Image (cartoon, rainbow, N blue to C red; front, side, top):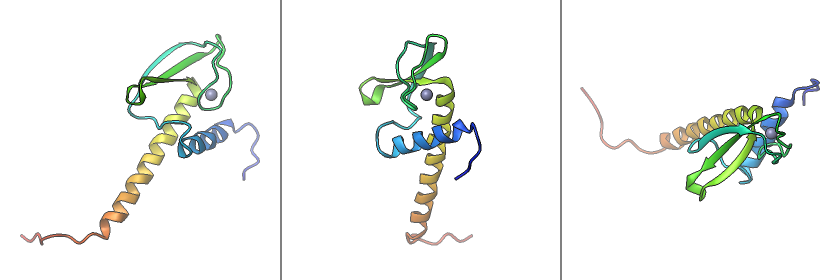
Length: 109
Ligand SMILES: [Zn+2]
């Protein structure tokens, strides 16, 4: 555990990862995105209120029945980072699994 003061981004990333793994928060990817003035709604990533002085990003998931999530601009960036890092991690797993499969047919010159 680091004891760096003010390293909020790391805490947010941890929180986002926990929420994605527990199914509380969808992964970034297949979503539509728009920005608007904050509406006093709690952020889907950190639960902090998004004030009218802040920009609120709204992620809309058509696949999930047009679910919309209000997210802070900073949290949105962290959400993307976490989602994509999880994505590449799962691809590595697929590669590992693929290695155990026998190759059908030999390709030779
Ligand atoms: Zn937030």
